[in-house]
Image (cartoon, rainbow over all chains, first blue to last red; front, side, top):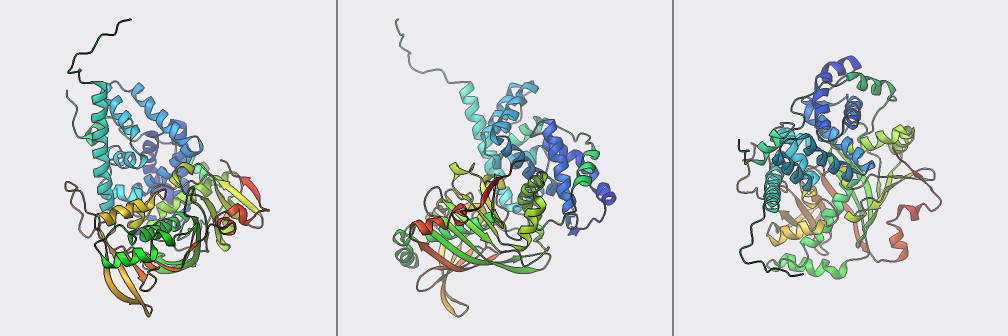
Length: 176
Length: 333
């Protein structure tokens, strides 16, 4: 069911409480300055569409924020910025496991990463994540399943690289 | 303490912003105040939808070309539409009927696409203004945001009003390159009377395709045929028999639903799988595609031709070649 909003006061009453969630979404994926811009831009777009707003707007707002963020990244060498951001995460972390996890995450496609993060970080249900990404719940379920599998696989590969199996045959000595 | 083995649980624990922080709503208010009076014209079709249609069509050609020897119809299709009949430029003209608001459907077009068969798959797309006016599909909002966002950024340079005014009454003519390695190539939009606006609205940037159905399976367009080829090899496309469409003898091809992985969560009640109702009608004699429907939108294909790779035909895929005197304006944020 669509909701219509007619003035700024009504818009603020309905949306202000969601601003922190959208800001958190952006902050998880970008630096604070960019996250602020992305959040403000997201609500500007919501305002422009005030004649027809979804009854449950948060997943929809995440969907908009995702696209705003994509534009941000594209214009500033999107991929490099994302990887730099994710690479910076372990510095704030205390755990080597978390480092490995975020590294594995960075190796996934953007599509896989987003569906995983919407579920894990934004805490969306399958239906909500589907609304945020503009696909059906069924398609989202398939995507999520595949993304989980790929993340687990990437994690396992990372673990294997970090802890290589000792050689099972003698290694010849090399004389100078 | 050992960490959980479920990657989702691990991710939850690694959430860098575990709770929603305060956000200065004043930043939003300032944006609203400086935003010009705006009636965003939401196109009921966006360029990638049409490009995805192209992908469907290309996929259809592949689907009925020689990968499934087990079906007589497919063998005939292979003979009619095999690689020998392909050309340097694929030209399509179509109308789309789909949702245009709550309980409303509208037909838009005809729209046209010229796309190179080979790399880098340069394309030119011409979309007619929407006949549905301000009404737009309910599920389009988030998706249309992709284009809306881009326009919003353009607006910071003070050109949004002009572009919006143009697109509201003129066809949108846009071109670019489809292939993955060319994604950084800017998209060119013709703005009358004689400008080409160069914007980085790359294919990838538009995000994942909006609609359930074939688009998801075929996207991105860099190699759309491989997805349908796989579908055919797996036996998920088949001849559904002869029929009539607007008095013409046609054959119907049904694409089977893509099965869920064995350990996927159960489907919510009433939810259908992608591909669940994807089908196509092809002309009985020539086997040219006439109509493709995905349960939500129906594309009526008015023209579908492979043009030889002559210089003149290749120029049809090139927005710049069509407007040689136009000034290129680089739109940057």
